[in-house]
Length: 448
Image 1 (cartoon, rainbow, N blue to C red):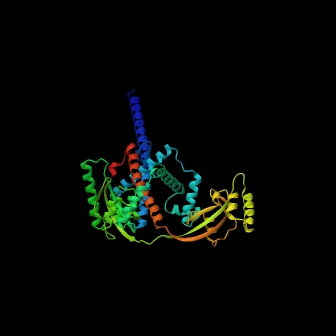
Image 2: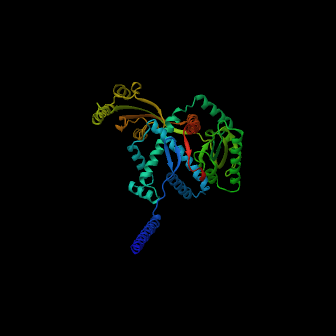
Image 3: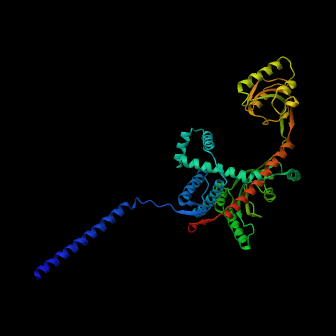
């Protein structure tokens, strides 16, 4: 019996060791398999920001950083520190996301047809076919799908700005009068400035501590500029302006397009100089004057006094029928009938009651087919029938003159420049309001 028990114990001990061996072998096998596959593990995408109901992922952020970095290198611009660049780009992504979300809420969309035409136009501007353009994008690491999505967003944001801001900006005649008066007294209408801009924004009702922090920030930016750091890099590192990552360049601006605060500083600066910090309700500003130009030549244009007869193409009147009708009118004119009489009788334009008289026409006032035919006529000459998108025309040039349009042009430019300035200020205010109303949670603050 003892011998039997001994054999049983030995047998059970062997089984125990066998089980231990199998478990150990399994662990080693699984470990080896894990190590073999470790190199193939792909890092999961992370959320870097929550913007209302949308998230911004680390992959999106890295993709935008790569795009901006490539642009900086292509322009030969020195990159800011990585943490600063990440913060600037993430803030831009947040702003873009808020605008795209708002556009979706109000039903603002860009249809595929318009998107196709825009992409085709961009390819054409680069003298490439769509296939060649797609291949060029691929070489830069950008898929056509991603490019189309970015262009769709750009169009959406532009339409949104036009709807929410630009369309609501009004310029009164008194504003134009005041502007022209100030320009005349300062003789600034001849001056244009090529400038770059850095903005260190302060809260609308900022506490003393906030203002002091902004002042310290602008002083540090100016210190770096004075030590030789490029304006583009300092802009990307410090500026809160929308074009911070584009180096802060504002291009050529007339004095009227800028606040008096900027203009007063620029008048006393030389090309290449950077202004002292300028304080405005929006914050602190630094300006760099790249170049300056001026001139006061009168704007003389050639005007044409013309009249016309128009036969429209409609659902009732086909193109062929309209052409037959206009040919019959031309034949009557060739046979000596008076232009103004036939215009009153047949023309389908609002000028018919005046014998088709268009009064004095400036270059660009009419569509290209009409203008080209009109410009080819001598005084008193009547054209052959001309086709435009409005229908069929017969044109007669009555006389021409050279006219100084400086005053009219000045008022038009004043209106455009005041509108542009007011629209930009309104847009920045609107973006700030959109940002303040939104729920934004940053998930990678530790990296900044």
